[in-house]
Image (cartoon, rainbow, N blue to C red; front, side):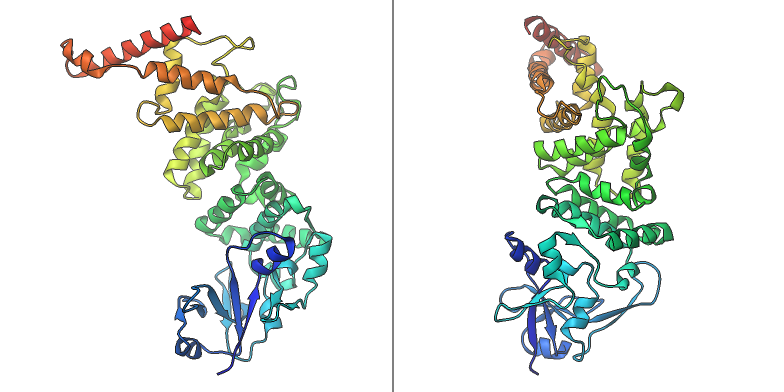
Length: 415
């Protein structure tokens, strides 16, 4: 059976934008599963026929149509007969810029105006069928973040459609895993705040992340936060973290570090005493809801609980401002003596917090170097010497702690 393969989706879009293409997906028109197997392709798709090329191992999917037949993004009936045309396959895609194809000769097949929208930097849905898949609200928000550097904006019709979808209750049918997958991809963007900003604009943030959404109403002390409310600050911190580190863990910790401010009684605003400890159970609950990996949750909880004290490690004149016991408590809580890298990640998130404020975007953060130097000083304990002094059992740990406190005191005197 003769069939025609077309390069589709993101590979076509990114090539036209001048972006390096790493993943290439293909659509096959006029074929059957058996014909693909006979040609040496390996089937991998269960819900619909997807095959791996015998040599390149790139994905080749049979052209298909989808019809809504239930709730959520699982509720679709799929048809992948040889009669399905390329245009019918492209029609089921989310955005016009993702609904283009390229043939063997390099010609672009563009039935829905993707080239024009690419030129005008517009994110526009292909058809009303967009509303049948709630995951697309998250995907479009992610594309807005991914393509932000090119200046892409949501088409007003698409914005309205996404708002109606957010209000319909369908977002609640999304599984935690699918939401988290989109969050991970969004956090990997150069400016991840765009993802959450778009979700908020269409009313999806309050459905999926109410802990973040409520922060936009919360006031802060203007002398420390000229940017205004906690939500605005949080987005600035997230983008600062993206500039400082490629670590997903650091970026997520930056995103959730101030959730405790969302439960400060309004009569206490703009102050938020104790927001660090108040935020830890909120972070834990959010991480459990979306099945966030334990390692990321643990770092996020540490940043949430200790960022206040990390900032206070040096006063405004750059002098140590805490007691030796307090310094040791923070260093121990950040698992430095077991894994020094964890404290380094905590400090990156704290630096992002300090920079995520209007006028402080490029501020130096001497606390990072100070805390690492202090922690390294506290780590110069010779455990063998302590054991040789005759300490046993719990006495050993107590002696080690006394020695660490002494080392910290000596470090602070010489700082």
